[in-house]
Length: 206
Image 1 (cartoon, helix red, strand yellow):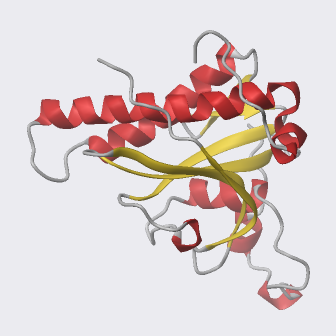
Image 2: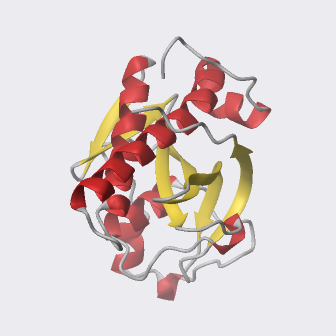
């Protein structure tokens, strides 16, 4: 971000990010666009027609860019298992590209090989399920379940997750950006307690 740009934030965003809400809402699309530019450059440098380094570079760049954004805002950055996450007003940004083509947010799903770190972030720091849904009996409280619900010390037990879900591909860039609160279900789909769409920023000129 540059120049301290800001947009009029929603009430939900203000409740999460406080006085930084407008600047964060403006900066997130810009940082995703910059990350796409890095991924596109890596794809071109590799000289591959398909399945180049775009997706990996994009994912890394998005996390790093959001962390840099937090630093510029004077907010916290926390290292979780070697990956930096932006933490603003006790809310950690969790970016995730859920498809490489435009798809409804309701169809977002984690792949089967998702790391335990990601699952634990979503489970331990994400919102609780809606009351009355998927209650777990004492006999089902396994060690694995307890581990997934244990908050990361690096983030702190009070830190809550804000999901930043988007779709993108190497040719067309970022298609759509959503952020909000999502509960990870046992089948790796999501129940969104709240979501809103952010504008897509233009890709910066090289």
